[in-house]
Amino acid sequence: MRTNLQVPFADKDQAKKLGARWDAARKVWYVENKTDMAPFSRWAPSPHVHSGAGEQPPKSIPGNKLQAAGKVIVGSDYVVPTRICQCLPWDVCDKCQATALSN
Picture: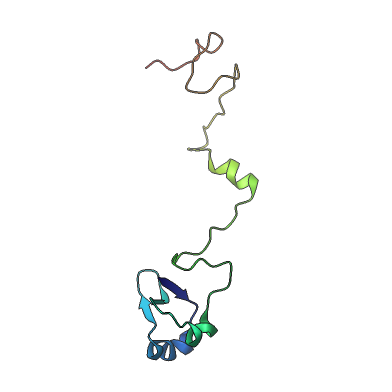
């Protein structure tokens, strides 16, 4: 089992002497298959950090940014299309037949 460690740069030599290894792709120190984790307890990850995942947890994005992220705006001539009905954009009903793109 792999356990990622939070080793400060100043402690890297100590961690290496104890058997920790550096994962260059994930940029994290880790140990594998160690039954006694006591020597590494000072570098143990905090409870919210997943051991085995080298990535940081995703940051939350405010709601207004999520809405803006879905829009593709090109140039200053962008026009928001008006909705005629409440059907899904890929469905064509009788109301929006005239404005639908032909396939």
